[in-house]
Image (cartoon, rainbow, N blue to C red; front, side):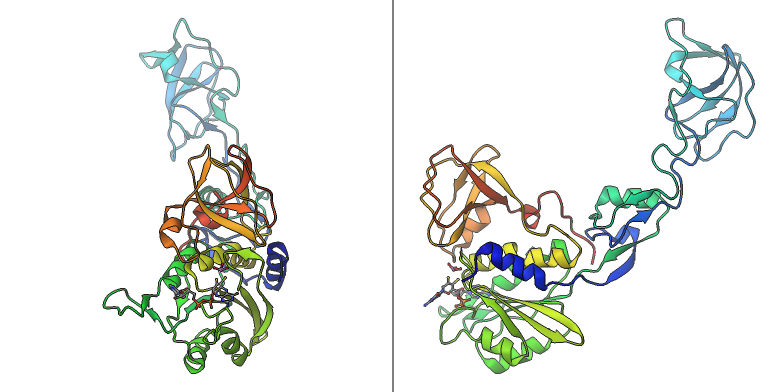
Length: 407
Ligand SMILES: Nc1nc2c(c(=O)[nH]1)N[C@H]1C(S)=C(S)[C@@H](COP(=O)(O)OP(=O)(O)OC[C@H]3O[C@@H](n4cnc5c(N)ncnc54)[C@H](O)[C@@H]3O)O[C@H]1N2
Ligand code: MOO
């Protein structure tokens, strides 16, 4: 059985980057840049006023000779003791290198005077110099940068109508089991609503945009073959259920029949032990297949620890694994067991407390929790107030780093 680290490293090693595409800048949200991008314009393109007031030349009082507005610059050149009205963002007229803010001035008969208790502005005061933010040719954004709202604004400001980004992988989610029913409506006691597919798709959406849902599929090799055929063109295939050792756990066989090669099976984590990873070559590409265990929390945790990182890696993230934080335990935690364990917990920002039950089928405790406490295999008991490592569940495990993109 692989350790968590071995399994994650091996899986990320199987992932190849998605193709690079030029997308309109305002649609690049959530993607990563495939290379450095230089500005094609200078910002600001010329000296601008940072305040509303008067662009002045020389000593006051100043004769007001015109106006410079944002979008309508003053065309002339100011001489000594002349000024123009100026608004925030307007071009500084030739002959002026400073702005007197209107709160510090009085105006009578077209003459602008400094108020008695005020100091005249220094050279450059209230002026945004041309190119102070960036100049044409400067590297605006480095390759690998995640495009969020500020990066969209910067790129558009730099004159970039499109950005070269890694595409999102195409993904199929297939959940399987004879007991599964698509919609929770009329349902017999021997059946259960198929909740994993929609949960997994919802987990993937903020990163990958879309995933097609192929389940639920019965525990039947022919039915699984028909469903897998629909995933022929996908970069990533995520199955849920049938990954364990039971007589009706057919996923491994179905994947082999489909032409996939099992890379590894079973990881020393709880929940999530029966995780299976496979690859399949098709049309010169390698598809990555993750067989997640069917227990709902096992599916969730393995999606969080494996599926999301592999997607991030394909989309150009060089540090795709979830990031843990040091948290303070609100109570005693028992010694670690034989596998690395991920426990549902709630943090209020000061301390973190377990929420039960921790059984891998229990969805209520998962829905209440906002983080997972990590208990390494064999770790000693932790006292109340001791620090532990925890993973925030928001943003798919990369806090503040991921934003949904419009697929
Ligand atoms: N003898 C052994 N039995 C089991 C072992 C083992 O090592 N030896 N491992 C256990 C562990 S750990 C896990 S996790 C589960 C995972 O098994 P499978 O991946 O084969 O999952 P299933 O048997 O298909 O389902 C398990 C459980 O989850 C429910 N389920 C499945 N799919 C869905 C879905 N789409 N939506 C909601 N719920 C789902 C299913 O009804 C079962 O209750 O195996 C243990 N057994
Ligand atoms: O590993 Mo299973 O995923 O304990 O429930």
